[in-house]
Length: 138
Ligand code: ADP
Ligand code: MG
Image (tube, rainbow, N blue to C red; front, side, top):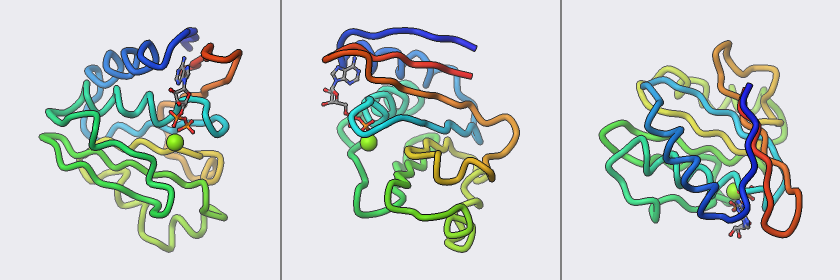
């Protein structure tokens, strides 16, 4: 387990870049944490570190559950805020992305906690203060 603190959004982004560089195809990153905790900011860094893509392609896919960034390694970016249950995730066929050769980054993993595969990297972000965040990686 690794726990770190950041004091700015760009620090969180940089932590994402460092993490992104370590990822292999089929990596699954389950992000936990409230609105504004920094999940999307961290994923921007991860995409930047793991692919040849600009972080600008990463936005909060609030009205779709999934955005795919087609980098050298593809990134499957889920935002499950509006999903109700893990059963919905399965019936939409999304579990196929767990082993599709890309990197899965899942915001609001709380929704599908019971079906996260073994080996999933669990990342919890907490709002400590105005710009202070804690990131726990396990
Ligand atoms: P989430 O996806 O968890 O809802 P976002 O990454 O979209 O969160 O938003 C985080 C917001 O908090 C952004 O506006 C960002 O600029 C701001 N922020 C301030 N400090 C930090 C920090 N240390 N880490 C990440 N984001 C921060
Ligand atoms: Mg977000």
